[in-house]
Length: 636
View 1 (cartoon, rainbow, N blue to C red):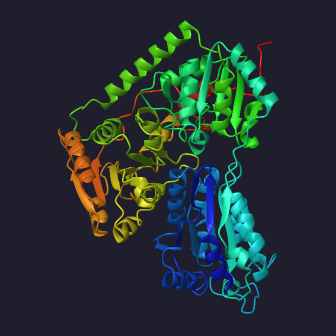
View 2: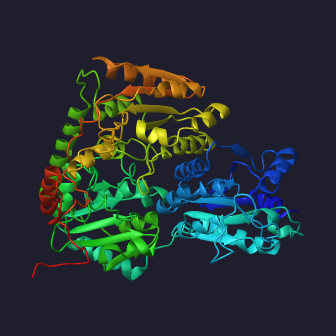
View 3: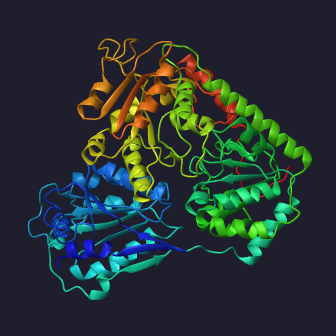
């Protein structure tokens, strides 16, 4: 076999096993072909397609970055048990996957990347699209994947394939170390022949690790729980990847401890559960942030504690606050200087806590506070969703209309701009896998490709739940070409395009830091002022753009009935068997309710602009609440 044929055959026979569940680890390959991979991986995929079409299906993509985004969307939908492989040609094709690699690794989600590389033999240096660096002749663009990948290797000789492929699979399915896994494949080596041992090609099962908590670590955590007066659970993505949402619910109900979620943890508890306070941090709710400010014990479960989760380390204000960090990854378990790390699978740890915390319960006063704060925030959301009758409704109202027309099992997909913040506060998650906001890398352009991956993941599980992608015009313009993929394969997604005529999120942020929305509006260039600050929007028709791809389009016209029309459009799209693009104009200056969180974006210390000087004064005031979080602290 050639190296490429052996690798494709190998990948077709890898299986993930989690308890009684068994599924193919790599159910298919996304690919865009060029001279670097058309004779190697491309030929191998064609051969498989002829000999055994179901063993390793090939899927077209329109952008290499989008291939990785689809893989990530699929992987999250399958709780990290499976993902796709992506093949790209040398040079720009491979380089286009770098953003996707960084996104996968940052989100702790598996994606297998197979970028082609230039000749290992160097018989024809420099070949087309080859990077040349005089100080390091062996350097190629694929070396840029090294800092972005959890595993990187290059098959310089055919015989190296075996150890590299096995090492790649080990990392891909490691719950603590997963992310982008990259195997660089020189274009000549892909087509070279080797005698392949039968054992390499046979079915291989990879049993998912679920580490149990160490006895002493668990005992210290239980002691901290018994001593706590105002505990708070922060549930992250690890709860969902572990399938621990039922264990979390049982633990919260037994102890009465309230639960707040990170962006990745959305869905860990249903929105209407009595113990659920909503999102926490910079984009969190007043309910979660007020209780976090007074909490003396934080039980972080499967969270990486991003700056949005901690509100740039301003949300936890109790002088003696302690952290019990339950995480399968030691790197995350030891954050905030905790002396109470529990390095374990989330579900296994919660099951142990459930069995050993008899008598642990919050006080009646604390339980009453939880109910009051939750009720107050729920009322704020109701008010934000109330129809305003405006010609151009605000984003919160649009979210409310989409929520009202959706079904409990539907999946909302988002990644960047102001939508993640509003969704974190406002979207009422009703299903563990119903909230898919990529916010570790917050990559503009992820939404449509990621939504396709989510839908593929649902279909692979036998579910025809609807996937609703909400995206602003700025993010849509970054990467919309995968709408063609949806049309080509007949994959149904619903895309709600919110037309802001610029960058709504960064425009607002620009105001808060004193930059007066400079460079955030989509306007004609003013050659005299040398900026894009005029009032007249560009005559861009994104509905027509989407229609040109062959997708069904519904345009919601501005007017007092826009919100009602949006609701009808969502219901029409849900009833259809085809993908639908819904276009609605909004007022980007109508914001959601303030949850009391803060995000540290430094403001210029000196400026000739009064707006910047005023912003600096406010910044200094807010920054004063930051704390180092180095472990248990006490006021001197």
